Length: 341
Image (tube, rainbow, N blue to C red):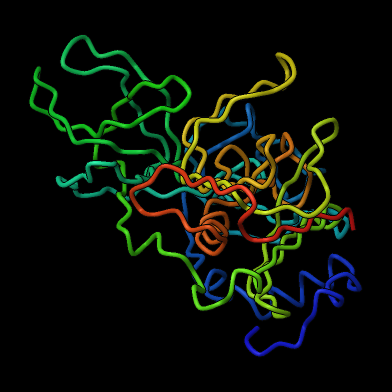
């Protein structure tokens, strides 16, 4: 929406539906046009139901378990007008599945990067599921399953002495240890790909506004909206805080764990593009464990698609140098205003 005269006051006046329609009409058109089908999809629910119609009232045809890789032939609008997410996926002639339970994925293999910076480099998984190992050069022990679009801090390229195979050595912040990933599943980011966006805009002229009622994020440069995204904020008992914050702490990857009890515990390695705005750990970050944006779904953070979270990570201040695992600058950062409306 270049040249738009659209102020933050206008943002507050519009309803969620009309605001989103207005913004999407002028923003991120390249992203919409880039959607290419067919695509692959990974099941992220424990059980995903295939229905004969793109609606929750449709007859159940069958179900697929967690981590099944599906071939998506078409993306359509289904459900009812009251649904916050009306996107459904067609699985050829088999039926339809709700998009919120399917992570869009691809299978892209990579050449091995042999020159890893001494301080490490960021890597991103580019296949639906990548296996890892906690150890090589001896009896190999299985490491965590790594999912498409998750990010990992690559510290070295090493050789398995038992068979000569190459592996990336990745640092795990939770265990202060390392795991190993086959290089063809990992895209290594170069410095230019992590450079800050809109560096010519003063830090004080950047603002992020998040509406919890609308589950909507809008980024402004001065009074102009330059980016918008559906988000998934904190669910009941894990509400995202409201107020004025700053992105003072950022990491391109982090192994997140938490939860209040056995039913809410989570263990998520390689959470990508983490822009923290509270000392308690609330952040805007990429999400690979659901695709259900537009409805509260998190434990207090602001869930985004990995692509959207990467844009926010690069656009907000302070910038994270390409070979640094984090930046922590209390009192600095892009202003984030979170309100209920």
